[in-house]
Image (cartoon, rainbow, N blue to C red; front, side, top):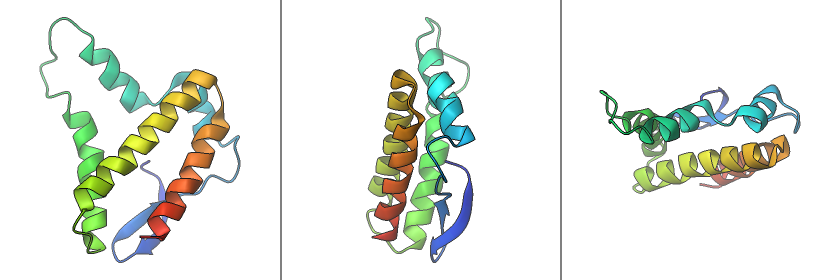
Length: 118
């Protein structure tokens, strides 16, 4: 979700809308899953906890999104940020599970409409 190219409002950078279901990112995620989500999931399965705070890997994008929604004046910025990242990670999981890049492309378009409607 780190790619951005358009401003959706004061301070909020909108994720780039995929041009097609066969976008390179969607295809890679269909084959391998979300690198960040997969890393968090796999490291959490280890018997000994990692030396770093595993939650930080997910907290960073949530905090970034929180700041963007707050810049729009949203009082519910944190809840919106969690919803955004959860929607992305969930669609990435389904994209990988079904090997269907269109799932991620459709969810990206839906999230853009959702953000634009805020």
